[in-house]
Image (cartoon, rainbow, N blue to C red):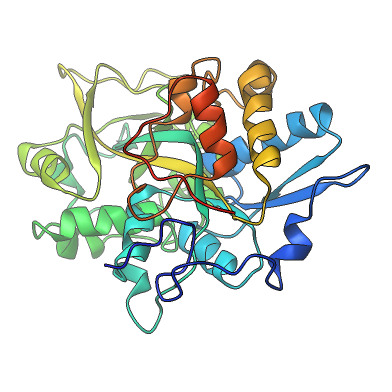
Amino acid sequence: MMSFKDGVSRRDALKVAGGVGLVGLAGCLGDGEQTDITVGSSSSGSTTYDNSQAIQRVVSEQSDSINFITQDAGGDPQSMRLYADDELNAYSTGNFILNQALTDSGPFEEPDDIDTFPLHGFSHLSLNLYWVALEDSGIETTDDLFGADIYALPAGWGLRDLTEQMYGEVGLWEELEEGVVNFETSEAASAMEEGRVEAAVVYSSNYDALPAWAVEVDARNDVQMVEMTDEFADAANEFAGAGYEELDEPGGWDQDVSIDVDSYPTWTETYPYMFDPDISDEVVYDLMEICHEHYESMQDAQPAILDYSDPDNFTFALTHTDEVGVHPGAADWYEDNGVWDDDWTRGEI
């Protein structure tokens, strides 16, 4: 695979600075000028979207020169395509989907591949995924999911593709798929309330919070964790496209969803923000400094926002730095805060 460490294009090796499209989005810092950062942020109700909105609100209060704009793109693959079409100049993406785009696999197989990528910025999200079921559904273990009506997240989401591939590799998805009901997350609470689905994939964000749509599920339905049988746990543990972690308890729930097990196996995903090379290093540096200094104000609006007083919380999702460099503004911030990794590649503007 061709390396494209300066932030860019696998075919052209370097994205041409000053090209059309993103110039209007990125802008340049100067007296009285403002830089727009239009950030593809999955879809409304997702943790990514809510994180971006919390950052947007605080940045608008703290900076006269940065305009952080949250864009509902409908999912990570869509964000990446919008960026490639010069309609965004930043996005959040899960590392599973980023790897697919880098390797022309999954939704990015030719002729649907993309060639242009932004540079790594900073981490903002870690998810632990698991199954929950209605208490009166009779679903106690993942083996009971076969033949049930289930929700596996929206079909356009990277997390859905991740889940399909994870179970598909061990022959579980084909039978599960027969019961999958598709709808947007905004319908999840009502779908469970009305009995249209009996179980759903849900996730806890940064260990302590639920996405907005799952908060509604929590408020309107009596649910419990689904015990993961060895076959399902092994599928998650052995799948190379995601992480695996056992939790003492799932975070973010108001009701008690616990069951009589020692721990809860989960599959995991991490998300960085990525920024176009045309965005100046000063802007990205200042954005990270705002997150570092004002994260508590962000948490007031969105509890899933990380504790950015710890510089290490900016770095955990930077997993593809061999292929995509780190934005110079982010690199400067990491160096100044003692968390730069010499194995990373510094991108160029």
